Every structure is written in structure tokens, then in C-alpha cells.
Length: 162
Image (cartoon, rainbow, N blue to C red; front, side):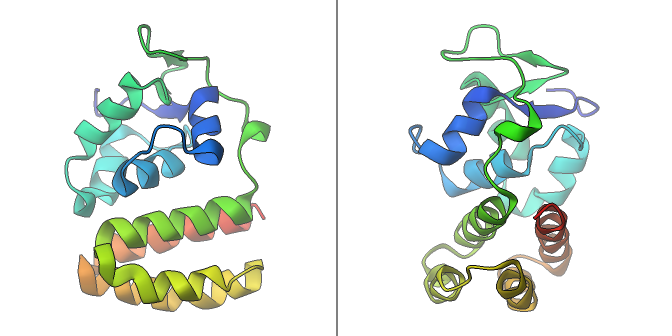
């Protein structure tokens, strides 16, 4: 996938966020949640560098038909579909919780358990916003501060839609 390409979730990708049929790894799921057709592959690689081979993860998602580049779904992927309309996404609050959970698990592994217990008690936008400083702290400790700050900004963008 070229660095200047802008990936977007397909209808299959939207369904996967809700149904979890593909049993994606937490890193892949985190990246799938973050793909909105607004950031280039290069930007995603930079922001998610702490997760590992971002290019490989994007290629995997594309091969599964969960994301498409430039409005084209992966041609030979099973269940591939055209890019999904914005209203097909899960609600922003649910998406923010999923993103926080998946990135914490991907970055911390089993050490994320106590943090995810706190996350499970957050039901409102205000409660999630209150948890963001701790989210940034644990990610910064596990990976690096740049990654933690980028992930917090992603969550804030998602919450702004709620």
C-alpha cells in the first residue's frame, strides 16, 4: 500500500467492528477502528508505529476486504464491498470505548486488565473523557509518549462526534 494512499473502512469492515467474526488481533482491530478515510498510510504508520508492522496490518485488513484504498475494495477479498457510508459506523461512544480497549490491550497485553476494568465502568462521554489522562499515562509508560499522545488525540476526535 502506498504511503500517500488514504484507506477507508468498507461495509465489511464496519460489520467486523460490531460482529467480530474475523477474530482480529487487538493491533489489527485498533487500526481498523482508526481508519476513517481521513489519514494517509504514512500518517497511520507514524501514529501507530508502536504497534509494530503497520504496513503489514493494513495489508492484512485490505486482503480481508475490511478496508479499501481510494474508494476501491480489495478486488479478490471475500465479502469485499464498497466503502461504507459514515452512518453505517457504530455509535461514536461505543467506537471510542472499543478503540481505547483495543489499543490498551495491544500496547499492554495482560497488564491492561486493571485498566480495562476501569474502562468497563465508563458509560458516558464525560466518564470516558475523565479516563483519558490515565489512558495516556499507561500507553506512554508501555510504549512512548508520542504514541500515547497520538492515541489520546484519536479518542478525542471520536468523542467529539458523540
